[in-house]
Image 1 (cartoon, protein in one colour):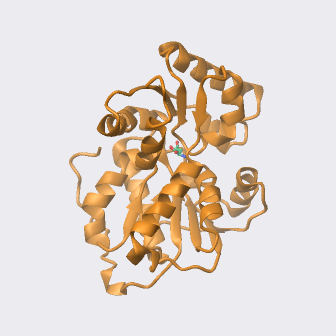
Image 2 (cartoon, rainbow, N blue to C red; image 1 turned 180 degrees about the vertical axis):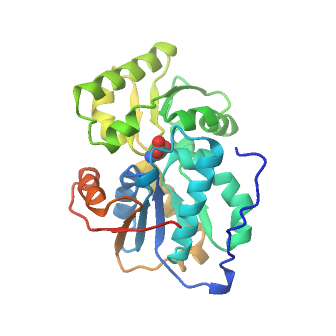
Image 3 (cartoon, rainbow, N blue to C red; image 1 turned 120 degrees about the vertical axis):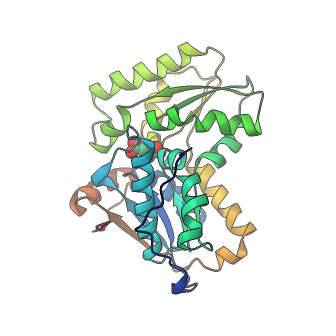
Length: 292
Ligand code: DGL
């Protein structure tokens, strides 16, 4: 987790705005969070959502703690300004490197009634219960692997489970550039997956610890024996959000429910709309947003 937090002088308290219900914010560095959003909307079709992809600055996975924290905080603040009372970081890298600091340091300054949730804890809760051999493999960005967040969270809940991690720095760029079906992509996918299972032959469960990776799920499975299960996060995070809203009716009341969705990107709207349609299998309209 981030240490030596510097006070962000740009933070403007939002409490004065009062509690006005709003959409649920879903954030990712790029398109990956769409895999989570899709499953969340299946579980919660009546809710309103705002998706924010920081495509202009993706990937986050190879960036430092300070930079990921700064970028994530800017995006969360923007979603708050758009009226979101609840934001989900649908990005493992941001959840690993920024969530704790935002929850503990920034939320009390911005608006202590709003909430920011991540994807690592619910994934760990689910996956730890799925392994029989007690050996789990993690495929994730360099940033998520270096943060050690997954092994640390697993240790808290399942101290008999061993996590072996494999950083896959090429995967997000290949997906963001729509090259993930190419032969070049096959080379990198094979290299990382085989290295992971060679590192621990007892792995029976592999977590896809990056929200971009569900697009590679079939390719990953084709490299593995059937005794190894591959787990994507979308349904896990969606069920966890449903559970959260049931346990927090005061937050549920602050989420508007007209079944709407708006997509915002820090990059070109045309590029976002065409790539997002690959993730969602659907045509979408995107809007540009400046974070400054
Ligand atoms: N989808 C993000 C994640 O889950 C990708 C991070 C990146 O931009 O490298 O980690």
